[in-house]
Length: 116
Image 1: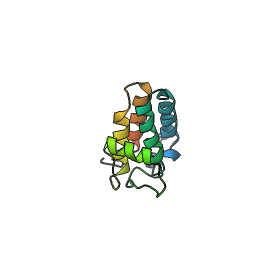
Image 2 (image 1 turned 45 degrees about the vertical axis):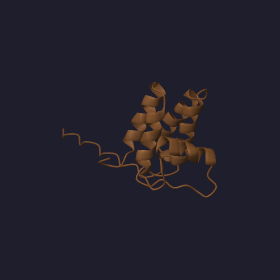
Image 3 (image 1 turned 120 degrees about the vertical axis):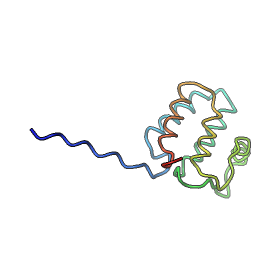
């Protein structure tokens, strides 16, 4: 019998975070787990906004972006022009320790651009 060939490696994810099923599920779990924590909930809101962009993109906001969300970005150290993957890492690092944060951190790392 011939040797079985190895399956090809999956292609790197290039779309926005929100289109990656595992990241989207981890984010939803983190949102649910942090409902009673206003600071963590604000961080999850930042992640929701960032999720419209791809990890290799730069942070940018539309003209009508919520002022409270933008203010929370500043408290997290997120600024326009920084890499989205770095901004998302800051969001995750600000969340309380727990299984949902661990899962979100894992999925966020998995989507970081190569070498980052």
